Length: 209
Image 1 (cartoon, rainbow, N blue to C red):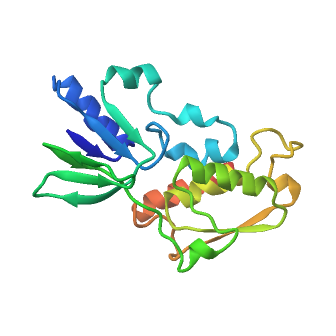
Image 2: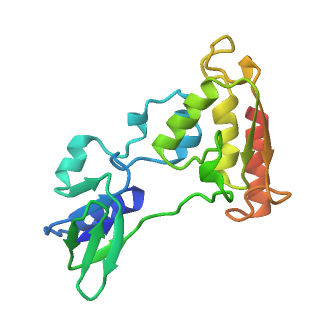
């Protein structure tokens, strides 16, 4: 069994196979170097700095060891040969499989030319959250959040609230930093929620921010 992806869904597949009695070899390929972790805290506790990165990990090392799965981390799957039943990795290795599960998840939407723009960030991985938090920690000025979904709404209070106290230098808004949110729709999150649910969630953020 070869699983391309090493996040929540891929871990769930592995645990389900073991719980159902599958005793064969399982290999998971993940582009990130971290073991599977929970992504929702990235835009809240991790971005705010109130959690260490390890707290977002979905399983302890001993629990992962108990799965008897091989985690191939920090490697990207770049090619698939369905007839030969092989997957090519970015380090030149070729992995064979009997059964393949592709659960790579999504990638963040980027603005045209974003990769070449200084100070423009995406928020999708632990590395992204750490990079953005360090950038915000040295910023005094205005930031913009381009969003109309879950992560964007949650990132605003995660980045600008003061979980450490208003006098702490890590409080971005206390140092004069401000923000503006830009969205493509009048009501945020309509792609992932109904208008009613979207309004309730947005209201809860505004009330607690």
